[in-house]
Length: 307
View 1 (cartoon, rainbow, N blue to C red):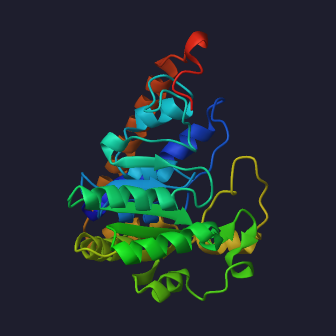
View 2 (cartoon, helix red, strand yellow):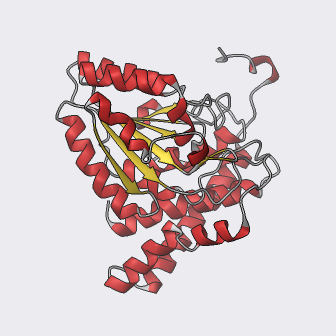
């Protein structure tokens, strides 16, 4: 992906979530504002046949992976046109055929599943890899250490991506996790690891490309992306962080910084960026119309495909 394509993807995530919040049927959501560079940078390094798993903060990763925003919005609205026929919602959104194996609402619940998908690829002799995105809160779960251990022992084609937005709901990472860098958790297992600025999409992409090559070569890896969410933990949470802290990180907005890079280097003019923004706005408007027109499940079918 070119830098302008990276910008388009980040703008789609930011605009999609803003449009979602204006809907009366937006429901309970975990949003990705401020964290777009992590999803977009990682997904830009993946191939079509690779699979991505993520946490319950799924909108950004799903759109970055290329899921049609019309289908994504239909799913969030509980409509039959969604990839899970409206049953999965945000917390269990999935479209394996599109390379998005799925979201998992339980903290750390995707880690061992990702190891299983990676093992299936290995046993089948496939060259595909699995990327698994999770938050810093999952780094206190035993499942992460179990996954690291098995991935190292069996040399699974697994890229673990910690989106460290520095808070577990309202608890600072520094209050609950001892390592200076969360990527250090992988070192005792002999797994290649690094920490990167998760507010810089170009830095995330560069590291992700390097690590994807490493994983495709036959060994797991762990990439920590230090980001910051601009929204509250969820649409039902109140803000607990200070105004100055929020203002500091908003100044580091990944979208704004990429725009500055594009214009300062001559890679894109302000007019070209405005055109991209207009195209993204039109696509989001089309998604809203599609979701509005889609039907809800029939009352007689509401429990079908629910397990």
